[in-house]
Image: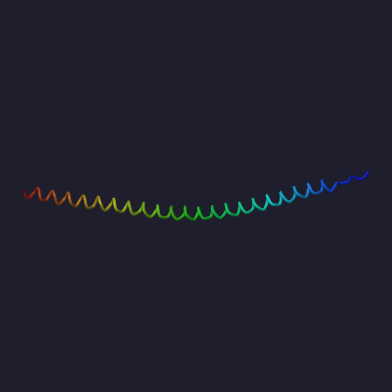
Amino acid sequence: MTDTVSVDEFQALEQRVLRTVELIRKERELRASAEQEVSALKELLDHASNENTSLTSELSAMRQEREQVKSRVDAMLKQLDDLV
């Protein structure tokens, strides 16, 4: 017993295979695009993280400097009060 496939059935199968191939191609392109975007975002995040670390250190240094200046001003004001 041999099964025969009609021309219409074969063409329908061929069309499904072609659509599947096209879908796979599009998905691969979308995946590659998404991977590039993820890579760019990781780089941007790394840069922002480094900048955040730098700014945090700078802020800490400025706070320390402010406290030192405040202490010096307080000492000068005390000396002025002692003179009066």
